[in-house]
Length: 112
Image (tube, rainbow, N blue to C red; front, side, top):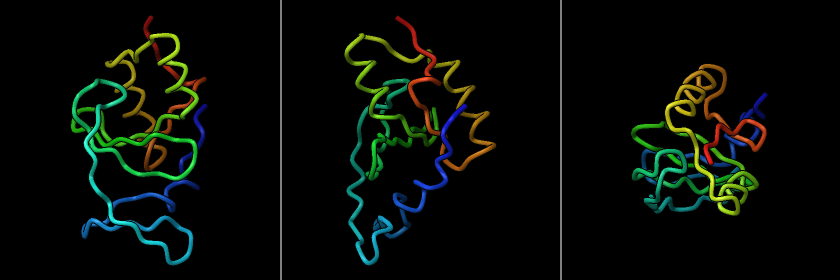
């Protein structure tokens, strides 16, 4: 089961103007639109700045999603990658339940 990203959504999002609100009161930050690699397919993706223990990406092929920092570290330490097709299917399914699917370590569809 995935952790619902509902509580996190109010703390990190993009706005049309390029500014984002982090939920802390009056703290607005300019979204710099960093381009990074997609954590699933390794294509070009936009990195969404997010508070908490998450990495968030918006990939043209995989969509918008979050991956827990613990999972990212585990992948790096063990030299593992996501099964791209299975993960995209999983994200599409979870995207019907929550606005931004969040992949935690117990949800990972990894290949050695």
